[in-house]
Image (cartoon, rainbow, N blue to C red; front, side):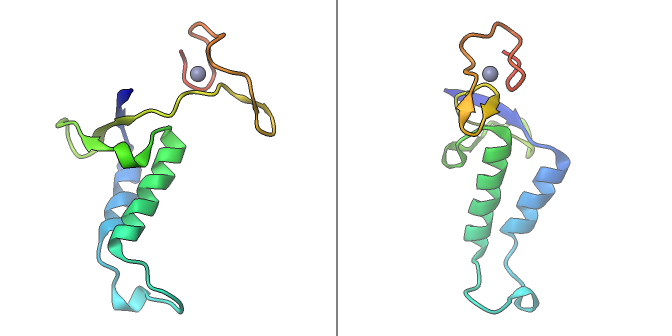
Length: 99
Ligand SMILES: [Zn+2]
């Protein structure tokens, strides 16, 4: 399901930085990362943080901090390692998604 998201100004800054061409001075030993790869990585981190699938991101016309994407289904909160409470039992009181 597509959902509307709003990133923070800080997240936007991080994305814009990641999309810039990599200046030669920033290249370290090893394989340089292309701007596309850094942008993908930045979107992946944001997706993990905000709960959406980065490959499904699309602009929704509300501004550059707004977009729509497929939301990762809420798993509820983590009770212990990889054990989640499940969201479907809650009614408006899920601590993770608030639903
Ligand atoms: Zn939830």
